[in-house]
Length: 56
Image 1 (cartoon, rainbow, N blue to C red):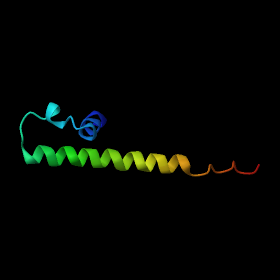
Image 2 (cartoon, one colour):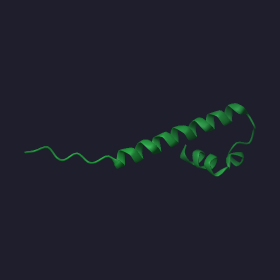
Image 3 (cartoon, rainbow, N blue to C red):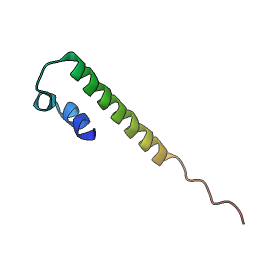
């Protein structure tokens, strides 16, 4: 899935999609959008401060 997103981002979609079907392009853009949202969520999670351990 990520390889498809990278191909779209790099402009190599025609190399992966042989027919010019709009449905395929819409699906591919949806995959790219999901990958982008997941990446942003992961980056936000990594930026959050870590919770201190509970007191003993």
